[in-house]
Every structure is written in C-alpha cells, then in structure tokens.
Length: 247
Image (cartoon, rainbow, N blue to C red):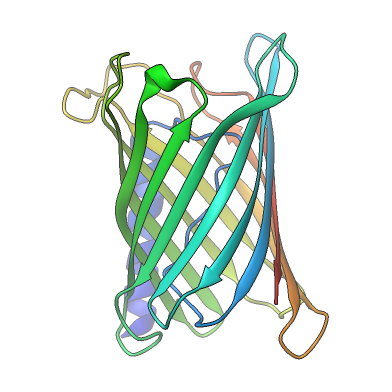
C-alpha cells in the first residue's frame, strides 16, 4: 500500500512540475513535515543561478530554529541576495513555522503545514506570506515529498500577484551518510490568471543528501542539487546547497 502511495506521489510530482512554472529563489529548499521536540538548529542556505543572458544572481540565508513541542518548529532567518551587477546585500527577515499534523509513519501520508512571514528591507513590499500543506510518503528506502504553497503580499504599496508554488523531491536513502535523488521547484503566478501559453520557468535536476553525526544529539545534515531550466524564461542552471547543524 505504501509502495503504491509513494509511486503515485512520485508520478504526480513529476507530472505537475513538468506542466507548471517555476519561480523559486536560487537557494529555495524542500520543507518536510517532521518536527522533533527540543531540537535546535543553525541552518545555512545558499544558491546561485546562471541566467540565459549570461548574468548571475545568488541568494544566501542563515537561521536559528527550535522545536517548541512535538508538532511545532519555528525558525528565524536573515536573508541576503546578490542581483546581476550589484553586490551582496541584506534582503529580508523571515519567520518560518512548520506544524506536524500526523504522527510520522502512522498513515500512508505524513502531513504538515507551513506558515512563513517575511519582512523585506524594502518596506514598499509590505509583508510576504507563504503558507500551505507539506506532504511526505515513504516505502522502504524511498522517500517522496510534495509541497503546494500560496505566496502573497499584504500591506504593500507596490502591487504583487498571488502565486502558487510547487516543490518536491524523490530520494533513495542508501545510507545515513549518503542519499541520492532529484528535486524540482515551480510556481503558477498569478495563479488565478495562469494559462499554458504564459511565460513559464521550470527547473529540476539531481540531488544528493547526507547526515554526519557529531555527538549523541548533534549532527550535520546537508543536501545539494544542480537544477536545469527547461524553458526560455528559466535560469539556465541553478546550484543550491543547504547545511543544518542540529543540537
């Protein structure tokens, strides 16, 4: 049963992400629904993309998180970006909250919910809200994740479209030290006026994962992916990396 669920989830992920658009930041990452009470972490994320015109841009963030209880994990990030022709600069503060809605492994699907508030440096952008379900399924050594997130701005003096973002991954858990698979990121925006003829951005590609234990309750988790754009409106390539120190 879990094999059928996982296989179906993987097929659905590939189908959706190959038919929708991508508008993820270079260092965007896959959120998972699992929460561990009392866990603290320092999280570093980095990404760099090469655009079709040859320019490059990058994004970096560093955060401090804590597992408040068995179902709520909260984290605060400082975010930086580097646009083409500009130097690296502070971009925003972000407060991320993940909620675990089902007990891990009890049902065919593990469910969670994400709610983020971002306060950009540019006050004209107001507040950026991102929220939506987090879904995970496992069978043996295979794990699949699919997240569907709504992103909108409130109290902004500059108009912004509401976007629907997709992200997902499939990975083979070969060992704790090394896992391999694929990741994909995408979005539909504005989601209420999207059509197949609109400019679309899509990127997906291979990913690797690992975990190095440094103590009884300490570990370094990492993952990296090389993503390829598949349309003229997509970045040519995106290299992303994430490292978490859990303690």
